[in-house]
Length: 143
Image 1: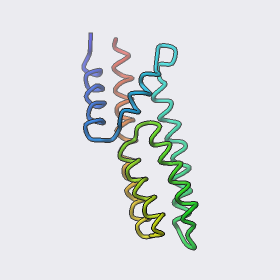
Image 2: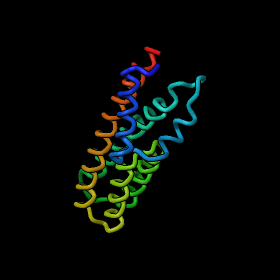
Image 3: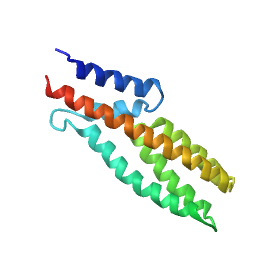
């Protein structure tokens, strides 16, 4: 029987899709989860957080002061975009693409402004996914 926590978790999950925070890649991760590895998606997302924190810090350092290495910035953002894609972080990925366009145009102000958007989308997604995983864990304990 479905309980309130499970319904809330399902609602949170649906809203992540409806608001464009995650895409079908997240479903593919869920399909890999089974009884042998019931926390697979959360573990993959936590690895994404760890990897992303390092990349964000490196990009911040590279943006602090010139001369700016646009190739290096683009490569770091490419890695971040790849990590974001692997968990289905749609809005983060979109911001990463915008950042890369500014890199290609060698527009440092555009890079800096867009990077704020990257971090904002990343932090929002992290907060929303943490709430979802918390609710899903609580819901599974009542079954």
